Length: 83
Image: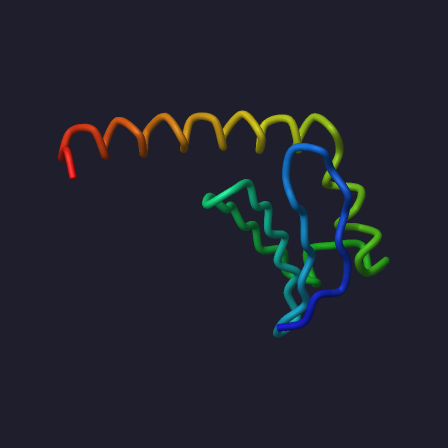
């Protein structure tokens, strides 16, 4: 798996990887991460530029919101077990 692009964003790190005819888009925020896999065959053939088009601000905003939900869910689970 190799990194083919990184997109700057103030709220999370966005990396795009290429592996086995797939693009993997990984979002990281602190200790949390989300990843999305896209088959090259499902795109129009313009390579990583197709991935850039999918990663619009509306999608990225929903990813950032999901990080907030993930953080809340984890904090609640942690508190239930009082380590």
